[in-house]
Image 1: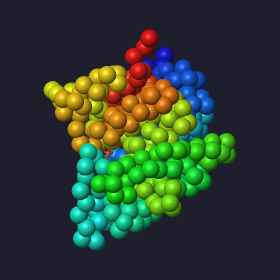
Image 2: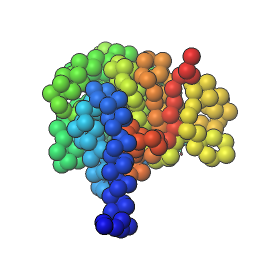
Image 3: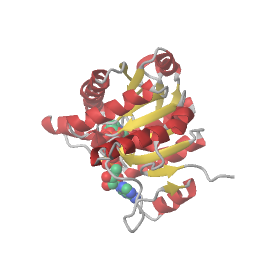
Image 4: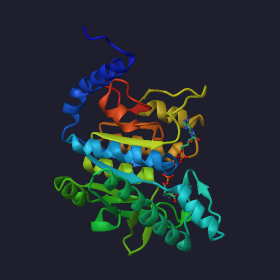
Length: 290
Ligand SMILES: Nc1ncnc2c1ncn2[C@@H]1O[C@H](COP(=O)(O)OP(=O)(O)O)[C@@H](O)[C@H]1O
Ligand SMILES: CC(=O)N[C@@H](CCC(=O)OP(=O)(O)O)C(=O)O
């Protein structure tokens, strides 16, 4: 008789996880999942590789993933080398004409190409672009006090749909074009939300460096409604970089996205856990069920 060793018990658990994934794989076939990959979630090469594998696996099982990335820490690093200090107001960088040039160079150059390369190294076909390509994101100025910071006013996702049809994975840098030919710096969460709403995505995953949205006691809240978010923001429990994320979640849900999840992108296989297992991860935000 065959004995169950500790090792083959592990294999049985792995097989069970794969089998349990079936209903989720079926649910997400053909689904559009927009993933915001924040600068703080990018971490080291091993974390980047794990993220890229998850994205390639999603595509392999029939999901249409779109990666929209940030890169705030990488912009800070470059600005520091150039001796420029930048200020944030409610999570958005005050961006003058010289700063927007650095922002575009870092986001469309170093950060975008690192992600594209990581996905392609895992056997995916990633295509890097920014919101300025093919009229993807047209912006209005958010507030004159913030300089070249844009709020998406028009999103034309045709180029993304064409890339899906060709089996490719779009990787989008959060920049937009103004009506006068200006380049606008868009907060990565805002850009991801606008793209998710234009695509009426099934899921928007906002990957960051905390396990989810925390309450006043510091515990992660696993399910939130727009109303909870408004109360937690008014009381100051949601602050700093979490504000653009939760604002984005509200906007995306109003715009027709089915649900938004804020989760820790540094946790191994965070996206797969969220999409394909019973466990979920992070904080799920959706409109209350009628
Ligand atoms: N209620 C909250 N729950 C969780 N994080 C919060 C909350 N309020 C503020 N934060 C802060 O928001 C940060 C995430 O935003 P940010 O640093 O801009 O992330 P990213 O670079 O991934 O976009 C967290 O690291 C945390 O310090
Ligand atoms: C207007 C604005 O603040 N733009 C952001 C764009 C990058 C970003 O959003 O990066 P993370 O997601 O890594 O924070 C910035 O300049 O830092």
